[in-house]
Image: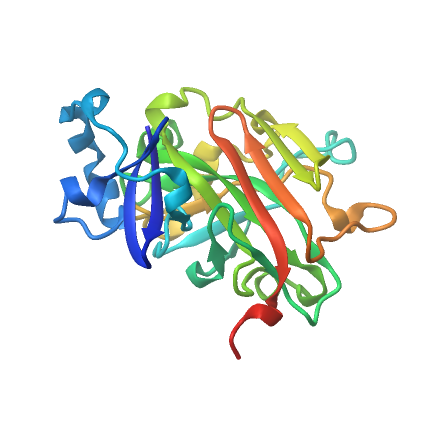
Amino acid sequence: MKLLSFSINDKKKYGLAVPGGVIDLQLLFPQYASLLDFIPHLYLLDNLQLSDKKADYSFDEIAFLPVMTEPKKIICAGVNYRDINTAGDDKPSAPVLFIRFADSQTGHLTPLLKPECSNAFDYEGEMALVIGRGGRNIPQQDALHHVAGYSCYMDGSVRDWQYSWFTAGKNWPATGGFGPWLVTADEIPDPQNLNITTRLNGQTVQQDNTSSMVHSIAELIAHISTFSALSPGDVILTGTPDGIGKKRMPPLYMCPGDIVEVEIEQIGCLINPVCSDAMLTR
């Protein structure tokens, strides 16, 4: 199943993507105000005769929102893909982690906003996962059972604001694209073997497979849950493959007018135009 958050007539909703558009799950489950509230109750969908239901809205009628609009946590893994320069290195004992704030996100087909004060707005295509069942000290062998589903993420980085660490470069408004939807974990039996591709203006700039992660999805969940209890709806970003703009010669950064895409096998394709943050109301 493909679950999404969206708005129609400026009203926030959540739904189920089907070939003809979107089924409004809020009409079926009015007791849950958002996808965040509904995530612990996905089992309720098992009792629906979804094949009999038609879309309430076409995709043209809706505005996509970040899959999880207000998660309690967005925890990001950095430097988490092997490349030709690090393949022979010893595996780090622990993942590199940082935080992205929920209000820095935007949805599918909505603009990423390049800060006017930056000349180094970089792309980072990633796979995101959403926690479905919370817990503390989750054993690695059980970790995937705690995942509700998987999505695409454009973890935009304002490189000239990262300084000594990642946080300042990762939390500008509308720099994190999240979508188009969450594919439930039952449809992805092996999330550790999916092709992931990032394209900038149609040109492939990143291409790898999730098998290249230094720390696997299960390892990330186990490690994070050791120091911070995970809750349904929490988001974990699993890192980006080699090919980022900062490491190219010359560097390749995103500019207003660009189109960036993140496509992951069995999940879908997240598309974001790039605009200037001068469009923000000051």
